[in-house]
Length: 492
Ligand code: BG6
Image (tube, rainbow, N blue to C red; front, side, top):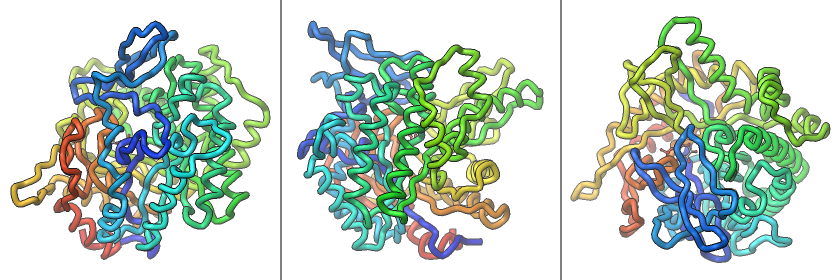
């Protein structure tokens, strides 16, 4: 029982859900800055404007067709609310927040950089110094408490200007622009940041292509090209990091959850295999270093042509990811049989309800064994170090009159999660670098854009419309997690 001495305990966040300050100190707009709030039964909307002044919206419904009209451009419209504009105001609370993380004993803090804070349009000749300084202050603050930052280079927030001009990651020009951005930050933060990941949940290119790649026209071919361009860009990031500072490590970040067959009908097992290929394709390329045959065959069948070069494949082989980090919140269930009891999950991964598991108000199931299963699958397939960078429970927490928050449901969820990864490490021998709870502190939900769906160990007084004092309050899970870290996962 327990974890290695230098196990990286901590918490995770993302700029577009947490920072706020969306137009401050030279920051440019990004994909999420034009995405409205929604709810469990109301999708978030991308708002847009045409040259003749006509405005409209395109709903982001998981798994359904989405596109912005060809003659329109995503834009902020005054009648809508955009939660990324305020987040939970990390921009002005970072010292206080990092202090709270240090009090919990965090060894690491996962955050993302907003590309458009550094290159407001994504392609300026020179970076925005104020943006660079903001993150520098954060890293210095972390090191004050011996917290190792873990930085995501792109967490769903492609610069809006690049979306307008190129249609997002389906265009190859994005590769060089991204390379310039990452080389800038690798050089600037050399010695301050050791661990990086390139694209948050890179398989979102299939599941949520506007978020994953800023695609406004996500045809199957555009998604395939978007994924390819991100793979090549990631390989170039690994190459640049190793050249700039051999100590740097650049990982992949995958959305992964185990999938169960609802019945023992072999047809259900084939369904599971296909669904798993849909996810593992991304790690087979980025971690394994080569395109798997099952995906090449699919492209052949569907007549999909990648805009690629022979050098791309050399890069993928030579500069695969140093480690595999992933999010895992639950599991899903699939079947070929008619079943009405639809489920819900991260990035809309649905299937049918698992009768053995409890669900939260957003329909996400709590699976006490999902981490052990995920860790075993990924470790045995790649034998590269793993890192759970997102795992947690969204709940409509209540701030009591005495300013306490009793989130025993979250403690129960996290206790089972730590036990599950302990089993993977100590029974199965998986190499696990760290664990960052989603989320360190309350922030806006990605899926619904609500504040009500809270994940943090710290409560923030902010409602769905950004009203509130932004004051921070420790939840019961704060003290629980502090104890877990202090005992290196032995006292749960
Ligand atoms: C992951 C994302 O998909 O899950 C996060 O990387 C997100 O950005 C998290 O917040 C939880 O999802 P949600 O939709 O409940 O916020």
